[in-house]
Image 1: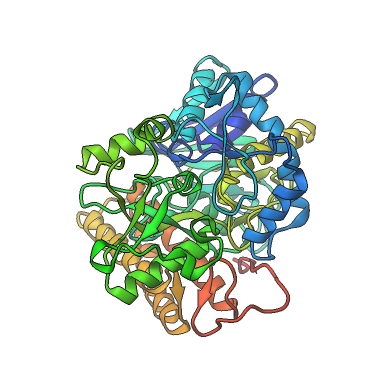
Image 2: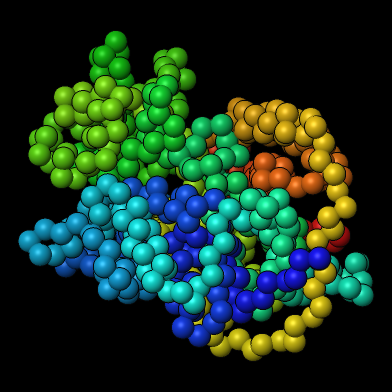
Length: 534
């Protein structure tokens, strides 16, 4: 029997949210960081645009709040929005202290502007902000030996009261005591015991066929928290980024919002006169919020039978493009696209999960000892649509809130921990079935639960999800767990939450657009789902 691993704080996820919490707790707590692949394989490192914070003369907290509320289509929580905006400058300062190489101009931070923002307030490191931030934090992590790192370790399930010996299975769980974690290299499930567990597992973009997210974005924390008895909120609001590079040899390559912020224009192909179409859809044109731009592109593609549209930034000088978008320029050049002379082919793709585990300003979930931070949460900040570059700052601000809560929390008695049941066998055809189910799920979610929805399509998706859940439950109950099986189990659970939430919302608001309910209801209400008693 493998002994339990014991820590004060177990952090599941190694993106900006998880590392912010780990680095700030390392001087007072024994911290473990668990990540299912490499430390830098999450979504944070993929973020191109930047971090929104009020730093420029003439800008104000109220302006940033107002822009966030407008983008969120009336559904943002005002307290959470103010909390984030007011703590954003300090979060940027913390990164500067750590040595993040932000872009500067005349000795000052260079601030760019993105869609939905009324001022230049986006701090960035050229067009690879997430990578620069992540590299800096990972170096600091390596210099902090008090943090134990477990790569290629994946969350199986949270350990709650219901899993403890002698606890009634019908009684509700009130506390999280750690988690079961799959050590992929040894094919062994380990028991991690911790006074505090922090979910920082990111979003669920891989539930869709086309996404800008890395392969790690399988909704692990959202699904595990739901199974443990936590509420989730606003899962119908999946943000589709308007501009993902369209090319047969490019996978999930995002063309940052900042390209449009610096004058990029969306055009129909030359066969249709290279018409600039965004002014036909919204007076803000290319600087409209992402949901507006994504729906406009979707409309034009369906209207004209197009595979993609074009994003043109070639009117800017080559020097400007080399300075501001070196990574996009280089990646496109590898594929034979010279963005200094020709437009970039783009399509919308699933980008950000605006809903998730319901938390307060300190990252508390419905279970004592369990916190959630970053994209895996529903803090109320994003409402029905996330404002560009509000995600990285949310990671830091709410991670710091969780740190403060953990520091002030009392330490309960540690109960005896049950080991994982290893009396399972592997099945020869398991991987084939999992692969087929994975493909089916992602395709019908794209077809039926995408940018524009109908009740009929949602009901079709719900029917298929029910069938998949039965099959996956059989595999999970009988066979040895693998990462593929666990990810599929989580994605199907998240898909179910998305569809349930979408069917409950009888209006069109923000990222959720329904042909059956095209109007906006007078009162904006969040969609909160509560797990059934188990």
